[in-house]
Length: 332
Image 1 (cartoon, rainbow, N blue to C red):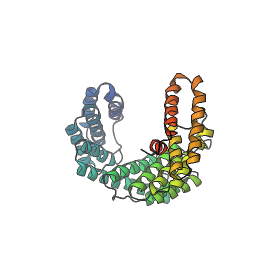
Image 2: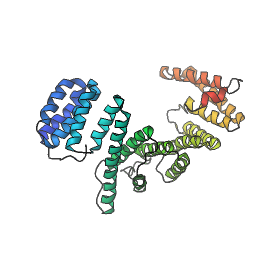
Image 3: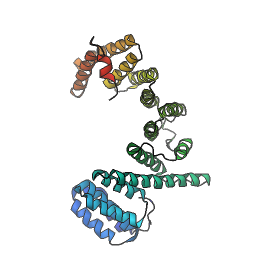
Image 4: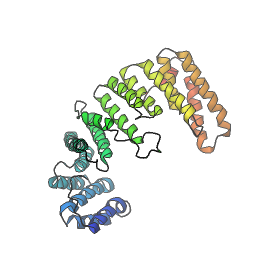
């Protein structure tokens, strides 16, 4: 948790960490005893211990009342603490209090936004960013997305996200890393979903193209995300082109020799058929079927079930029944 007085006795902090990450799995009752003892020391230790207690009551015991009590105690000590607000939001979701959950998520978004704005100010002043700044940005996006699922009209200050992208916050630290970090994929995937929920799929598709051009997204991830965004806009031809690109990249880029997943082939074929090119869709499926049938006889046991399922689905999609291909390939 952020915003907590760091002056915590090292031995007490070690007990809190042990209870929060180890004992909660093996001996949750002992974890509770340790955390209660740590909370009795007050200050930052109490805040950390009570937060961990809330997690244990919620995750290990399913005790919603106990978890809510602990998270609210943390928030009384440190109002607006994002981690505690998120814990409380989870409790309220489990108890069916959607209004309370939305309010807690809103406060968490507000706190996380302040944190990211602080990072931006530090960078502008020539100061280094704190460790974990990129994870705070990703958490902000995740929480904003959860809130948007409850209320799509809720927005965040997206200039903070644009700053993170322009700052290249998620670039790999080592020069030997040629591929962008997976955090870039997570970042753009979450932002795409947020844009779509708020009715901006066209903007999402454009932003993904820009991110790929800027080297922030590997080609395969960019194609898959753009496929989904373009389908949301109703641009079936554009979505079909990106879906075929996913299949092509998987076909020539899979080091294990397994090629594209059946669901991606079916999706590409379905979109291509909907776009009006049923001949190309059929040829795509026939080629995928032939490859799967050729691979099946010598496939290892852990691969056979997947190949058999793919063969069945390709054959079903190639049936002469109207709409068979489309119905098997549409997005679920």
